[in-house]
Length: 401
Image 1 (cartoon, rainbow, N blue to C red):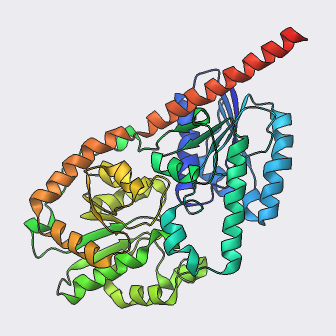
Image 2: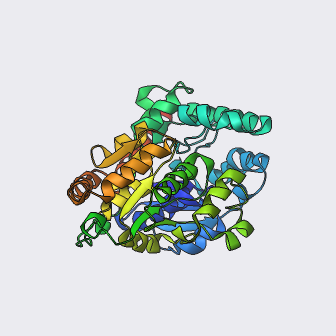
Image 3: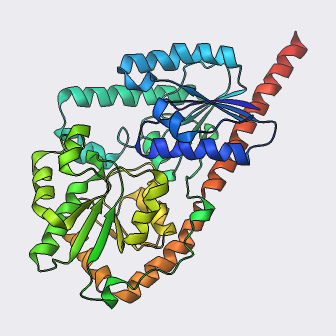
């Protein structure tokens, strides 16, 4: 089986993590006769550094230009590449696919902001008219791409349910294949005593993500501010952002609303900026934390949730459907955007060593449902199904001729 993987959008965040891990796993988990050609941004090509008989990497800057340029890539340039490479299956790994693809196509829909009720209710109304129009156009294009795909893949039931609010896709052409963490990352170490066992020790709270308004960092900043105002000064919030002195050059802080930047500045030395960490280094951040917090308004899956559970951390998350689907009873939940409730949840975990230990045990059991190797094997199974369907159609056409 030969597969062409269109991953030109894998520039940062979960998309970058996904294609990097996928490239490395295909080399070890695919059948010996399978071949994969991955088209990725230059930064990912340097990071992946996988070249073997089975996996070949091509570079493209298609997602770095205008939106029209990206659409031209998906519909014209990619079509030429399909004709050149002659894959049995095209795997479009990020939301937009080819219309009338000449070979079977699996489309991974992984962006929640076009379809999430929470985002559409709480964030989108505050955007400019131009942004809202662009979002509507992109939503339409994703739905059109999904309508032309042989199979639409989402990483969660919640993501699929949100997509189906807008796109009419037969159930037979959908598949939920959850992401996960590598089996080798499952925690086997003994964590330090929880903060409740050492009342004077600094409470170390971790947030892992890139900055985006739907990540709702502001609610976490307000919650930490509330705790400091109530006398808990021994709290440290670790963020995977550049410090303001450097972040403004990269756009992380300049895109924050002024009120959110003010909250961040007001926390002063309580905030530790970890910077944008490579995937292999992020695990050290989990190891050094006491509690992981994920306040997002919408996600397609939420890699950091399973990473935190794998690392043995108690998790606090906003109570949106996707977080409950992933964490089950292995997290403490708070109403989205409710900073007071989040502050109370932090206080509760910080003061209850038994509850922390219970959350850690539940997380360790829960995360075994979300292993990266399982994702890759299920994806390969789907791609082989599509390849077999193509072979059957070719055989029928040859017989008729």
